Amino acid sequence: MELPSPAQIKQEHPLSFRGSIASWRHEAKQILERTDRRFVAIVGPCSVHDPKSALEYAFRLKQLSEEIGKNFFLIMRVFIEKPRTKLGWKGMLYDPHLDGTNDIAAGLRTSRQLMLKIGELGVPCAMEILEPVMAPYFDDLIIWGLIGARTCASQPHRQAASGLPFPIGFKNDCRGELDAAIAGILTARIPHTHIGIDSKGHVAALQTRGNPLSHLVLRGAETHSNYDAFSVEKALHALREHRLEARLLIDCSHGNSGKDHRRQQIAFESVIEQAKENPAIAGFLLESHLFAGKQPLGDDPSLLHYGVSITDPCLGWEETEALLRSMSISSVQK
Image (cartoon, rainbow, N blue to C red; front, side):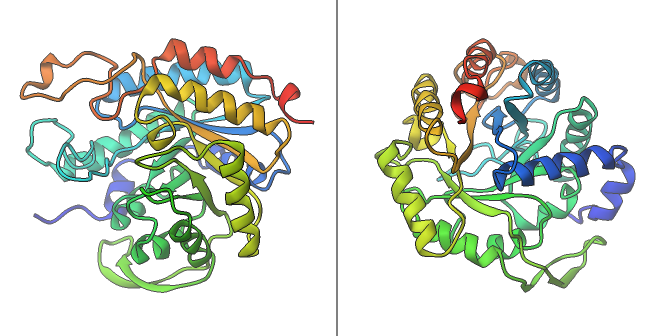
């Protein structure tokens, strides 16, 4: 089945707040370069599956941002693709109806509409780039991008990252090794000519300028975490060895929480404590939804509990709000 082109989707659902996008990207750049000493906090559902609950989360995040925005640059995780080790629901982009019909055309439209509504609320969006050819449908809306542990060694992902106009974080691989992610950062920083799709949806030779805002994200491993001070210093040393800036983000979920959402708080508190002495830590990621935990998708989507993740378990909103309020940037940064 032929899909609509990026240009068509953007024409159907146009961006009306380009000024906000430009301003948010400027803030993101300054924070990553540490000229702005706030933390970037990328928080939200493991993967979005219900636009209504995602918008409610965004509304709450906006209210919180107005309260703690001097300390945090809050960005919402709007992850519309879910990487799978084996099988499972692959995300709203692929199966927006949650019924296995895999209506990707509807997924494209639903996902873009959701990002637009979140942006209109005044909340920046972050997205994991899982399928590189999907990036042109959303590249005008994203403020922060991530390349996951399963794809940090992928040449197509590195090439795509080199052409995107916002920070891209490369996560360490599933074993906790840094080499592939660091190679990804280096590769994404230089210009490339690669095969992809253009705005009209045609397969084309694309030329990129290189992305100087590519950086490292520590997300732990299948068997251990890497948010502790020793692991952070080891990562910073590896970056320096490759003549890269000593800057990184720490993902408090995944391997750093052992996929136990309650343990994200432990990682978060460690990150904040380290940041008192280590300005190289530019921010963190938290998996968070309206309500804690997760639920199976099942055969009947109408039976799903509202605001509960259907992929990895998440912190609830109350816990998330309390954690973020607990930190004052004035006590963290010297």
